[in-house]
Image (tube, rainbow, N blue to C red):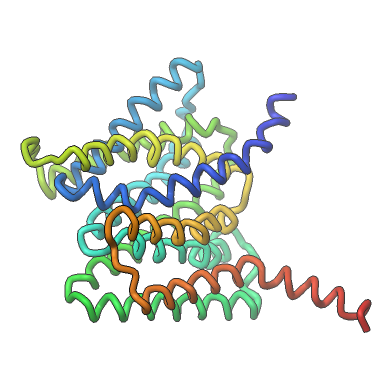
Length: 308
């Protein structure tokens, strides 16, 4: 009982860990696929996470559920891991890491829309509709700037948008599965389903291992993403997803674009244009309004009669 009651106290720590890890993930994806084919880079990352995760399960004697409901959970998780991540790795060849993180910031809005259909959550208020429009105006500014810079950038934009849709869908579908499962077991189960699919993608798109062309920076990024981005990041993500609703978990992406853009500019010499700043401002403002607008409006409505 005491251990179970203490679990929710880890939610803030897990939330912060996910924010920090996801802030560095886009840059790690860009670096890992600089000299390694995207399918091999993400496959190696998953293998590292799966091996270490399975070892932790054995060491800690944590049970890995193999019921029908458990595999349903693993399958829904794999939608976001395989679809979202594989597309992001391909997009990294066309877009800076900061822009990728910014577009992923739209996931709370998409999660909210999907939750209405799949979880019967309330429909958007006028405030949230306005927030939705503001955020997508910001995306339009970012996209127009990117499309005018390089004719190939539209490929990256389409890939990331599809990745965000799959990531959001996965997060909402996970909430439809009623099962009590340890976050580490949930992570290992999802990786167990995802890793063979990444191997299949590697066979289809590359099927080569040119070790002599791999740089140390790419190898280090793959190891970092395997341990932190996949294993620790997923454990934290699945843990907070068990205790918070899908759209609140997606709030992580309200914070990460700022850090990701700063890291890209400082560590990878990525250009932060005026259009990108304006678009990012609109996206983040829209997300902030989406999350807190109704609450602030409600508080003002309550205070108004008292003040008058």
